[in-house]
Image 1 (tube, rainbow, N blue to C red):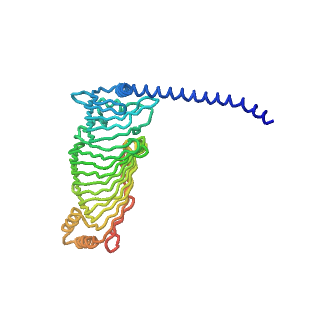
Image 2: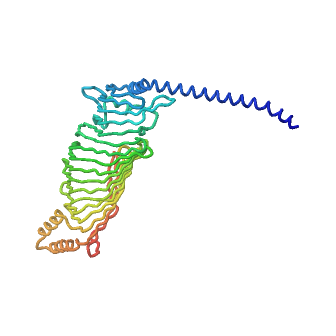
Image 3: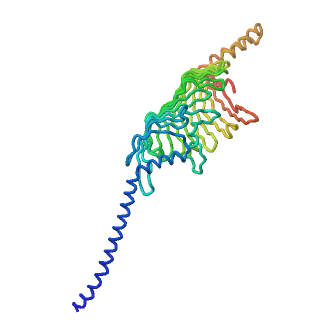
Length: 408
């Protein structure tokens, strides 16, 4: 019985051995093919890398020239890159270092390092143009706008945008994946911008930028050296601490800022300064904004206020052709303004030797006495369309320092 079992087991071992040898042969063949593919990619790496750059330039139809300093298995170095007309280029880059990656799909770009790129553009008709680069920036595509999935190291990047209002300079540095993980700084400077009868002086923006989940974020101060307009508006140096971000498809934006302004004047009205917060969101062509602001030492022809606070909302749509706003006003330390007090004094003089003169004198003295600690509360509602503009004050109440209602 034992011999029969041994004779039955021995023939079965042969097929298993043949199957094992077949699997080894298939595995060996696969490894040989894989090694051949890798060897071909390695041997053709310079041509593949060169074809990749040339094909990109041809795809975007960009007029460009450059010098190749180095082409190796995993790295390319290009210098003296000029895009556009060499006599008036749209962009120049001193040095570009490209890390190459290879796979079964061919060559691809790894990290890109840009050293001292310079970009030149023009703002006209509300649109920024960068010459030949517009073919990329404004190309029609079925894909929603988004930050590119590119690992970028940017060193001393600068841009100059010229416009009918004046020049704007921008500087940026940073590194990381542009779609998510990029961190750096950005600064903008406009020495003087003029338009619509106004001149904006020494406007600057500086802060940190970062990207996360395809969304760009900015945080930093925005400063204004001064603003003056032909209509009499003047604002002295002011600043705002700003935080802003955009959605991944750049269809929506949100921003909030903390304002601290210098003295301001509009005609005969003036104030010593303003502070507060502003929040704004742009989505689907609609602006929604809220504010909470306070002005110090407000001097109007009709009244003086130690402080005037405002809190409200603003909504706009259809290219700002439809505007709606509501505001609550709260004034403190209200006194008669120079013009109104002069009017009452003139009426008092005109009514001399009548019973009206003592009454007017009483009104002036009582209003002056009630000014300390007085409060003003009012509501405003604004509606503006292309056909009409309506401003309504649903309620207003002026209480004196004694608590008596002076005006309602």
